[in-house]
Image (cartoon, rainbow, N blue to C red; front, top):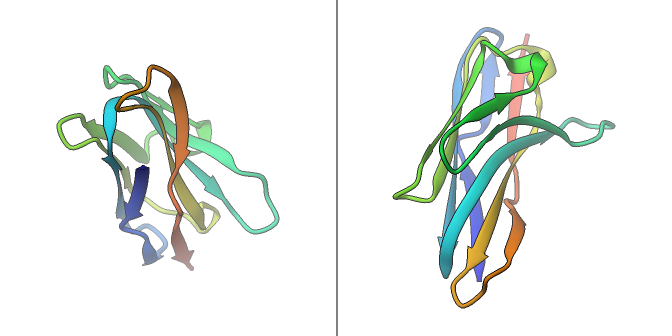
Length: 121
């Protein structure tokens, strides 16, 4: 069983910062690309940032220059540093990872349960 567990969400004022973490655990052979998505009430889930296994990042235009995605391959963990937060960043943030389970040879996509980020004005 493979699990992704997020942490670090919360309530912050406009202009503040938060750091999200997502750790993959279980019987894992390899972790590939990892990403953060978010879903605000009444809206579709959208990609916020992604990072390849070689740590090459990509960002949605709406967060470029404010958010930074990094990963620690030794810990199977991805981070999202969020600075200069705006009310429109309020959403549930979900972690996603492509993983080969131990004993398998197939890439499979996994999702975390989500963590709430609320930016108050």
